[in-house]
Length: 206
Image (cartoon, rainbow, N blue to C red; front, side, top):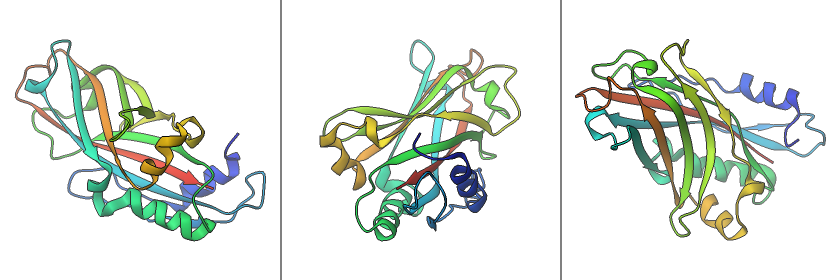
């Protein structure tokens, strides 16, 4: 296992973040010296990714999509995380993992008040490399009519060990898009409603 449970708990306690539209607080990366099965240092951060999906833009099968370039994340969060990790670890991280994830509907949304009004099925967040076109899952979950409360926790899926060797360099410098894909609900699809989404990824490196 990449991270020992007490390391993850400490990382979560150290990083507070707000999921929302206007109010966006991005936790900065901090140095964590904890017992994760070894005395090796690690770093962690909470990275906020804003998405927007429109009811009228749903695919024919109801799929909703959006993407954000890693270099366009608020406060250049990904590259700041990697820079802090390199400074703390003395070089490129040997491993990077998403340790927790959550999604919420931002107050700036129009025509919807709950995620369950937007989605009816699986939702996935992944990173897609610009050069190779390969995609790696970051987090995923299911949102149905009865899904609550919000924000909704997603299952973390990413580990650097799963990345092809020739994708690691471009990944570290931010040459990728963060892609969102979700199954739209029947009432939302084709409507004039707009869902502003806020996905928060808790990421750790060592």
